[in-house]
Amino acid sequence: MTDNKAMQESEVEWVGIIPQGWHVDRIKDKTTSVVGGDWGDEPDSESMGENVIVLRVADIQDRYFKSDNLTIRKIKYSSLINRLINKQTILLEKSGGGEKQLVGRAALPKNFLSKAICSNFMAKIDFQAIVDIEYVNFLLSSLYFQNLNYPHIQQTTGIQSLNVTNYLTTKVLFPPLYEQQAIAQYLDQRCGKLDAIIAIKQQQIKTLDALHQSIIFNAVTKGLDDSVLLVDSGVEWLGDIPQGWKQYRIKDVAELSPNYSENKPEPDELCSVIPMESVSVKGDIDASNLEQYENITNGLTFFENGDVIFAKITPCMENGKGAYVANIPTRYAFGSTEFHVLRSGYKLNGKFLYYYTYNNAFRDYAAVNMTGAAGQKRVSTNFLKYTIIYLPDIGEQQRIVVHLDQETQCLNALKQNLCQQINILEAYKKALIYECVTGKKRVNTNDVRTGIKLPD
Picture 1 (cartoon, helix red, strand yellow):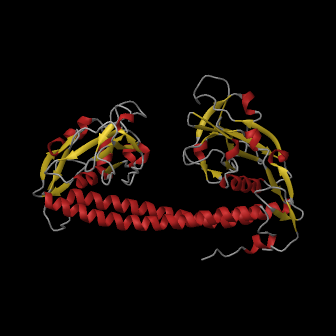
Picture 2 (tube, one colour):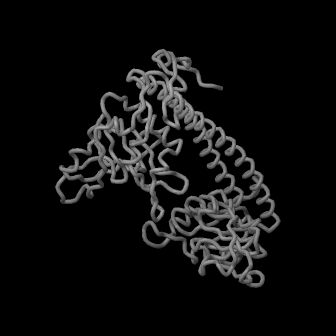
Picture 3 (tube, one colour):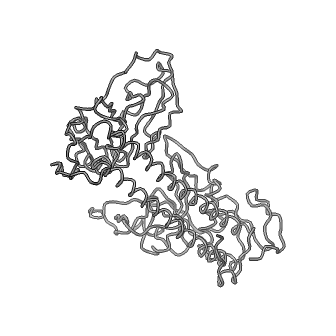
């Protein structure tokens, strides 16, 4: 890696000084065409056209496109002419995004030459043969990492739209072609190693999640004493349960949709407002949003400390949305209408009920019994009321809760450590790409041939 070559001012604010021989151009100056995608018709429709792969925004996987679960659509022949992917194509997300993710990701469809087009939520951009398309892919990724697409985003009714024409006027750097190729190969080599390490750590997190679920299921359905005699519960999803545990319906030991435990809030009393997005799949609650009671929308779901909330709608329910409500800074909270609220009675520990309803086996059973149309299915109140629950005495429930709290804390710490490692690796990857495409780090063919050992 050689960093001591002559440098020059670039006149591009996000780049600064660049190597001699590198040129500044607008992205559009290196393109040959820009065309929007097409969604076409169902593949078995009677309309004229050809069935082809249509790559969607959901198919983007880092800098490329995944090759499983692809969508086939029938596209009119006239629409295919300018839309088929070729070896100099980059696809750019022009509509979508979300609260935590800006629109504007670019990805290289290198495995789909002449076999696919993109959906109407993306733009197909063809580049001149004088640029290396892999280099361009890394270059556009670096722009996205630095939010340089943000000034060109318009947002209406929650949907972000990227003004592609304006975005393509962004000034970027193009080194000589041989150096573009060296940079692309070097970054592909280095980022591939980083991605492999990240994938291993992500799999470790999934393994910890599976272990967590197993620990919860065994504790709330088998108890903590491995020597206890187990008997058939008669409930398929529960399996065997400890002898002596008593059978109840949830409605026998918990109140659904309970009322205020104290006086109704005063008009000027502060209450917590907790929408669905403020509850994590790990049971954490963001209760920082406070409103006076008189300003809170009618019809929201009421709950308070000590209650259990359980997401009723798909896919929030399956994903684990729910919580044991604790440490709410106000007497009362109001949340999404898509929460069921349960308040345990004297025979049931509230935190035990949360763990019971959080475990995957219970949620799988609830999913099978959902009602409603596809995409809008919900867990009914009657399902919760009449579902069978087996309980040990209240003392053992408390011991189980303490055990699960400790195990959860330990596993969460391990997962947090892995997440921090992933964040560091992702940040290093982004910095590496930026430094290479701006000439802060120089790459030559020797770097690609020999490779460079990753830092410890």
